[in-house]
Image 1 (cartoon, helix red, strand yellow):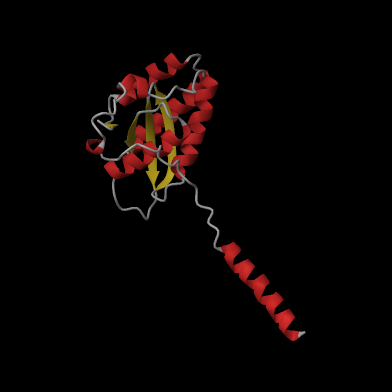
Image 2 (cartoon, helix red, strand yellow; image 1 turned 30 degrees about the horizontal axis):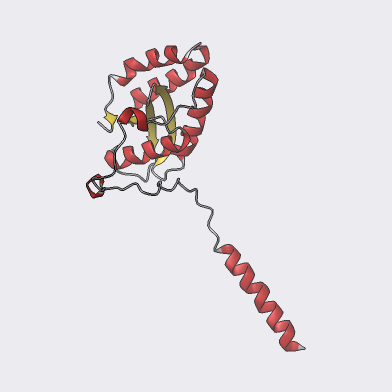
Length: 175
């Protein structure tokens, strides 16, 4: 009888331990089968699509869609361990991103961080092709103000026009 209780106890204990091993990390979308990180490895017989044809259709059709997407992008970017706060504004297929980096992150906004931010933005909206990322306090404040000003914007074109001035002061990734 003791063996049965011991076996039952060990089974419940093992189940509890294995349940604790299940991760809750957020996941990024998996690459599409057939795509390659090295374009030179593709077979020459396979036709490639024109860049215009490969762009994903935008789910952002109204100002309200843009506001919702911006909030989701900010949340996705803030999940990065290097980022404490993120502010996002949209200008066509470009996301303007102002970052407040964590105190533990001693680096600057480099191509690695820009790529991670662009990837996070694209998990929310596939049609965003570029990201202009900065940790400059003044530009971040301008992006935050622009994002807040979208409440008064009536069309997506109004939002894009307001973003153009800030966009001229930033480097867009990828160039």
